[in-house]
Length: 311
Image (cartoon, rainbow, N blue to C red; front, side, top):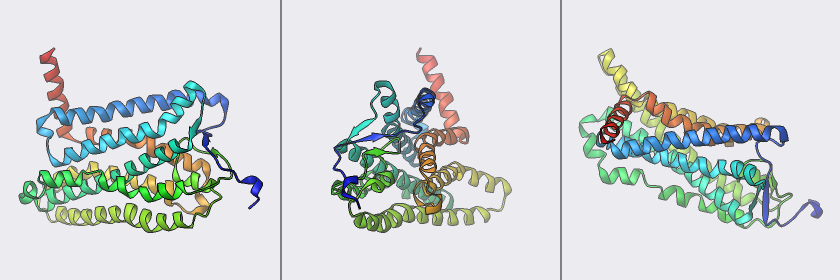
């Protein structure tokens, strides 16, 4: 590679969602609206579960973890767009970029693990309901809701990235520090990163949670089909439909963001799926659980009545 095209960078510049000046104001207000709405909805779910004792169950404990992960994920990724527009500075230091990538990475890992834990919760509730409270006890819930594995899982990526010595440019054609665009800019040897992505990222972070979730739902659907009454089958499927919808949305977005074929791997599509994954999904997740779940609706009514009485 031509040495003139290589440089050691101390900061990066975000190109953003679009480089058209006339769209910047529209993008800012649209992102701000989505961010505030997502933050408000997820915070509502979190506070609702904390305040309503009838929602103090394993499933809703895991749901609050999902809401917190979504709030952090949205903040980490979208704040660059908002702050950049307000102060007119789209730069980020090298250390801050790696930190942002690390935080976003472990949040995504933990979200996959939480969804896997939720699928196990649904499996126990439907396939072994008499043992549910014995199996899904407090210790198991805390273990399944732990963020430790995701926090540790991303460290190898950051260590390898910190060892990259040069980049072809310091302009990131993205709106946050994501792994793929940063690795593409590097002129260092990326073999170690490719091995880690294949062995750890694909097998452990993506494939294993997906397979565990898939296997859980094979047993769940099998048990539902063995229920004799139509009402019983409908009720059993209803209890896991919200979670299944969220799983499908997240895995499909991650596939198109990171695992789609090279022929479809364009900068525009990467930005679109990244925006969908970081802005739309954190908003959709709690809405899906709220609108499809009678327990959440009832809790909202009880909490609203409690606030009305207190005031």
